Length: 257
Ligand SMILES: [Zn+2]
Image (cartoon, rainbow, N blue to C red):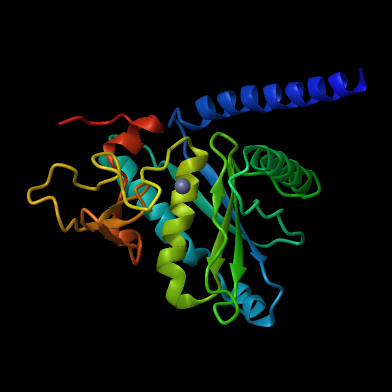
């Protein structure tokens, strides 16, 4: 009996989350007013190098993301500024890290914990919440060679981004942050199991002849296709666009030509 009750409670929580996400999605993809995106930084490895890096962060480190989204939104027919990014400094507590494996139950459990953490943080904070909150966890490049994956909850309006605490990575950090921001709006990944962009939806110019090498990446395709088997990471958002498939997923008034 108790076991059934536990399942029922879990089911109700999941139902609540699903309804909440559907409402959020409608609210955030109407594009009638700019979405207020707040970015927070966290020290992922607790090192003093990372601390210093976070101390050096300013609003202008996140401006290229705002410019990128607004530029692409305009190109796809959004008539207002789509987003307004604000950097809100350092977090006092650290968001829970996602599981490393592909276990579905573990991932659901983590996403509930992450939501609960974000809600608690918002309640205990004096300032207003943004429409979307991005939590960027920084790691020292001297001790961390590869980062855990970043996760933007689709319709959850929160994302956890793992990034390098190093100015030479600012461009690629911005690409990752923009990618996860697009996830929170409901955009889906457009790359395959070997991290190669899927044609046509993961390509910036899917019908360009010759098809390779592509000059830019599609934000959800992630990489710039150089040949059918090769792709490289964009160095900055200057090498990235939002393709029509992604634009349609987040309800931009796609101009099909
Ligand atoms: Zn993704």
